[in-house]
Every structure is written in structure tokens, then in C-alpha cells.
Image (cartoon, rainbow, N blue to C red):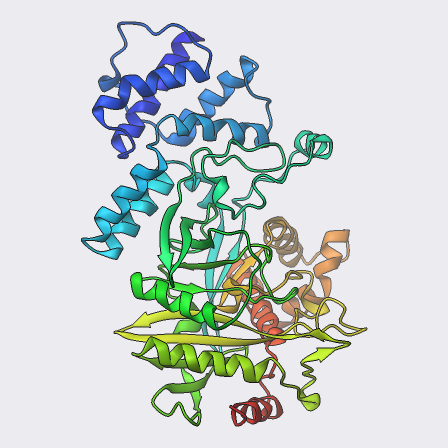
Length: 501
């Protein structure tokens, strides 16, 4: 046992050195921290760390966690192992101020060099578990709006029964207040809150206020980052939102930055903490062209137009950030109270506001852009989940809210679809079997029957057909989320609103 532990510790130290986490002079110190963590008092003098051959981090951690379980240091479940392995990795890592100092030193060379360093660090530290993320299914489909990105998220581990039971008995805690608070940095975690011992946040100033930059541990796209307010304050779409988004893009022009809306149904999953999401990725929305130019009185110097996109998007462009902010605020103030009964749009019902905006900022060739996606969260008796929400005919694939990432053209679909569609439906289509044979199949039967009638399905084409048809559903979902529909009547209604600006 001890020999295996020593070998794995040596492997981990070699990994840390090879990936820039450790200086040569830190190896003995790191080894001793790991020995303490495993309650091991011995280390053979004959060990030669420098001769250790590198192996994959996932394999090293699996071995160390198995030993921790055997020694009673950790329970054998995904949740508890995830808590313990963040403590293992923390033994290799510098303090937050050292990471921040390195980041800003590299920033002086270029913003991209700084983010390249920090992204590599976040993966090497295992805060981003790359061996899980690579399990996600990702593909592109063609649509009338251009290429659309589809993903099935398989990287989030499912909660195990032992952890669920323990969480139910756990004493409630308000520290940290949420998953986006700065207090998560270095936090050990608990059964109902993920471990963040290996987490480091970059402090920065955005629009004169204190914020933190981190990467998402689930990286839905390249360098998927989160910009979080140092204060635990609610999300709010206002003039300062546009200032902050554009100020961040000014500082990091190779990144986009956007915000979820600030209302339920059309907003993000964490509305209690002000935050934005960005990264180094070209989303399908960014490649969508302007299809109708709009001249806005008083802002003739700012390019504006309606984007050819399934949702209702106004794009404004200028080299002058202040002019963009002023126009975006003007559009927001025009949209908040806007109603058009013929388009089923009501700004409020019974005093409850419904209109808001999902904004996205980017910089292209020295010109700043804001894509302003008009949202409305009204519900009706026959659409209790939201009138501008995925329709019931799509719920077998996508029932969840449409947030920022999906607004931009990247579907994040539930893990269940891997088995339900790409195994069960696939098998039934190939065999000509009963599409109502099981409860799972029956949930997809109406959709699958249309596919069966539409194509001659073979072993060679079935996967491509299913990927395209799942993509078609997502396009329909986005069209449902559009407040002005992609019909002649809907686009005329959109122009009516544009003429009020």
C-alpha cells in the first residue's frame, strides 16, 4: 500500500512540474503536504521523483482516491471523491495572489497571453476536469440561419444516492452564499456544495467596480469564462450592464462577453448573483448577418439593424463605446414598456414586468458590437412554462429555459438523450421496431415516426440523420423563444417596434 502511495505521489509531483504548477524548489514541500493529507509518515529515501514516467492525471487521481477510500479518509462515491481530489490538487498549487500576479504580468505582454496562461492553469489544476469534458457530445448542423452548434452535456457527474441522502441531513449553511461568490476560492466544499480548494479567481476592475474572472468547470465552449461581481447582488439589466460588458471586451478584445436576462424563465439559473459569461469562441449568432438596417433618430452615427436569427435581435456597432452604451440603454428603455397585442407581447400583466434583454458584447476589427436579444417571460394558461419558451412538442428533447449560451446558437442538451435517442430511438429506427414499446421510446415516438417517414434509414446514415433532426428541434426551440416570429407578420411587428426607437 505505502509503496503504491509513494509512487502515485511522485507521479503527481512530476505532473505538477511538467504542467507548470510546481517549481523545482517546491517539490519536497509539496510531497510533505500530500503525505500529511494521506496521514502517511514514511517516505523511502530511495525514491527518485525525477525518474518517474508521466501518466495521465485521471489515472493518478483515481489511484490516490482509491487509497484514500481504503484508509477511511474519503467515502467511496463520486461526490466525496470529488471533494477529496480538490484537496489533493490544492497541494500542488500556488496561492491566489501568485496566480493573479502571473496573470497580470503576462497581460502586459498581451491580454491573450494572460488568458492563455490562466486557461492552461485552470485545466492543469483539474478545476476544469478535461477528462470529463471530453466525454460531451458535440456537433454542428446546417439550418436556414447558418450552422448551429449542438452539445449533449455528459461532463457533470450525476448525484449518487449516498450523497443525496447526506445532503438531506446536512446542516444548512449560507457560506458561500452561492456558487458564484468570491468566497468559493479555496473552499473545501461539502456534500451539497462542490469543493473549490483548487480554484483560483483573477481579480479585475470593470467599469470602476471590483469583479472576478474565472473559467466554467464545464467549458461548454472554448475558454468559457465567467465574470462575477465581487458583491453578492442580483442580476440586473441596466445601462451599467452595457458599460461593464463593453469595458471587459475593451480590456480583452479577443473575448466576447454576454449577460443572461434578469427575469425568470428567460434568465439564467443563478439570478441572485450578478455575473456574465464569455470566452474565446465564435458563436453562430456572431456569423448571422444584418437583414434589415435600422436608422435610429439621434443615433445615425451608430450602425443598427435586425439580425437574421431565430430570436429577435438588434445589432448595434460603433468604435465609440459611449455611443453604444447610450443607444443600448435607449433601446432597453423603449422595450421595457412595449406592448403589441397582435404579436402577443405584453410588457406586464397584473403589475408583473415581462420585457428584458439578453445582451452580448464583442469587438471585431476595432469596432465594438452589442447584440440585443429581446426577451419576454409572459406565461399563459396553455403555456405555463412561458409563451416564448420551447413548445410542448419539443419537450422530449429540450424543456429547459433558453439562456445566454443557447440564445447565441449553442444547444446544451441533457445527458439522457445519449441513451434515449442515440441508442433506443436509433435501434428502433434501424429495426423497424415499435416506437411505443417503452415509456422512453413513447416520449420520442411522434418525432421519430416523422423521421421514419422522411428518410430511408440505414446503419450508415442513421447517426447523421438523428444529429440533424435533433438540430432541427433546437432551431424550432430558438424560434419559439423569439418574441417576433419569423413570419411576414412577425417581422412586420419587429419593424413596428424598431420604428418606435
